[in-house]
Length: 87
Image (cartoon, rainbow, N blue to C red):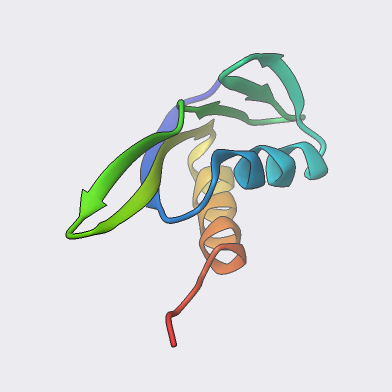
């Protein structure tokens, strides 16, 4: 059914915020790491951490699965939603 996948590594944002986002889009949690939507599927990896100097950041790998057009649209909307800048 799904012909296209794209994986992102997201740093600095807690896993729970991603989970809440995908559930708000109409997804259903099918396991601790999988969310099934109407025409898409998400693999939401476990939250890990990396150190950048003295800063410890959460890291989450997210894989989008759907047809190519849907994945590209979802990734664009996702990146816009989680766009942040320091300051």
